[in-house]
Length: 311
Ligand code: ADP
Image (tube, rainbow, N blue to C red; front, side):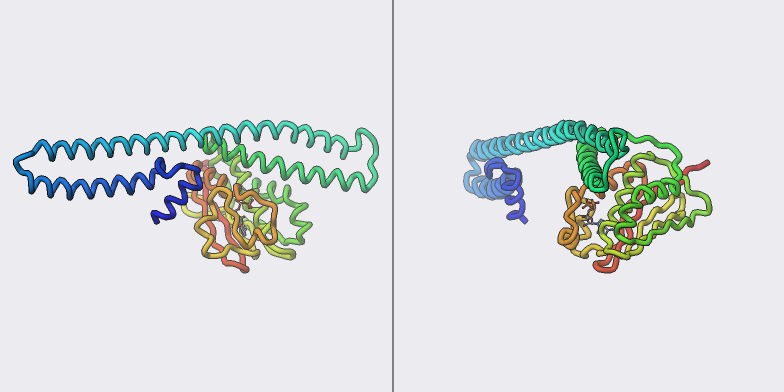
C-alpha cells in the first residue's frame, strides 16, 4: 500500500521529501523510535530528567516541522486543483463561443437561405453539424465538471413530467436510434404519477446520457427499454439495454471522472467518461439515487430515482 502511495506522489509530481504519505511513514517511525529511546533513557538516567525532556522537545520539533511541510504540500495541491478548475472553465468558455457561431452558420447554410445546396454539399454540412454537436457536448461536459468542482452548479426544484421528458430525449435521439437499427420503447408503469421534483434541464441531461449510452453501447438491432415506475415516494427511471455490458472488475469505477470501461474502448472511440460522473452529482444533489446492474455481453440497466411531486 505504501508503495502505491509513493507512486501517487510521483504521479502528482510531488518530490519525495514533500510527499505526505512518505512523511507520514517517517513521522510514524520517529514516533515509535522516540517512545523506545525515551523509555530506555528514562530507565538509565533517572537522575537526569532534563535529558528526557530535551529528547521529547526535540522529537516534537521534528514532528512539527514535518507536519508543516505536509500542510504546505496539501495547500499547494489544493491551489493547483483550483487553478485547473479555473483553467477548464476559461478554456471551455473560449471554445464554446466559436462553436456556437459555427453551429449557427451551418444551420443557416443547411436552411438554404443563402442558396440551394446539392446533395453532396448537404451531406458534408450534416457531417459538420454532427461533429459540431459532439464538440459542444464535450465542452459542456467539461464546463459541468468545472462547475461541480467549484461548487457553482445551481439547481431549481420544480415539478417535472418525467414521461414527457423521456419522450423528448427519445425524439432527440431518433437519428442515432434509426442509424443503429435499435428498437426502443418507453413503458410507463406509474399509473399517471409521473411528476418528480427537480431541475428539468439537469434531469434531461442525465436521461440523455443514459439513453445515448444505451444506444452507443448496444450493437445493431439491439433493444432498449425505458421504464418509469413508482418506488415508495420516488419515481424510478430505468434504461435497460441488451448491449455490451460492463466487465465486473470495472464496475466500481463507472461513476468516476473520465472512466471508460476497457470493452467499450475497443469499439467505441467516441466518449469522454464524464457523463455518468456529472449524472451522479446531479441526482445526488436532487435527493435521488443512481445505480446500475450490468453483465458483460448481456446488457445493462442504468437507473435513477427522484422524489415524486406532491400535487
Ligand atoms: P462516455 O459514454 O462518454 O464514455 P459516461 O460517463 O457516460 O462516458 O460512461 C462511462 C462508461 O460507462 C462508458 O465509457 C462505458 O464504459 C460505461 N457505460 C455507460 N453506460 C453503458 C451501457 N449502457 N452499456 C455498457 N457500458 C456503459
